[in-house]
Image (cartoon, rainbow, N blue to C red; front, side):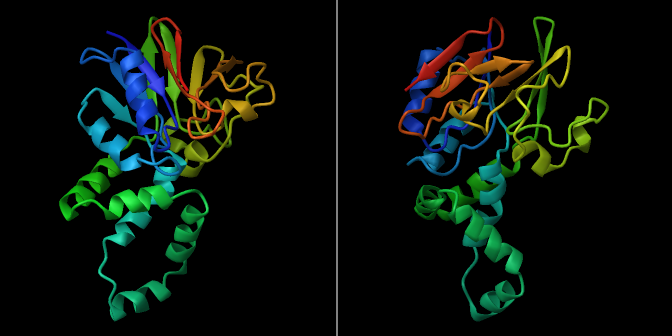
Length: 237
């Protein structure tokens, strides 16, 4: 029985399946996915339906789900004159859609539109259940799991008091230890772009940070996972 964490699959269904095989994922294990399943790669919907098969896969929300969920709900609407008039009075939705389009939503929209009406509703319900953060204790070591970071960080600030933006969009200060006795595991920032990382593209571990987004959807990237029971790292290129 093992606990694994991975993040930022970004539509790379093949890499996700190969990772499950690589870690020999079983019904006795638990896998936390730190968001950004959607967008960029070719098969985000296929990944979601694969994840739904496993009650021991715990999905968490990333910034791409935050952008995508309201837009996917919008795509369910019948485009009528009244709807267009109503939309014109909601410029925030227009700009949200534009922001999502600028962040690689094409593959998500294509797959979503090919689904049956029933399957679209299943996807929306599933995305709506994603958690914002998780806390774990494995072998007497404590962890906080988030997609992005802990914006406006304070040691005295409760996790419940962080906003969605502070957790899914903020990039941590990887050169500052937030806690003395808790590890913060995050995705969102490809480790190729962490200046202090002396092994770009591999999991970054320093100052009680564990950054696990290794750029799965990038040409030179890989999908990464870490087993918290012993710290072993796994990669699929």
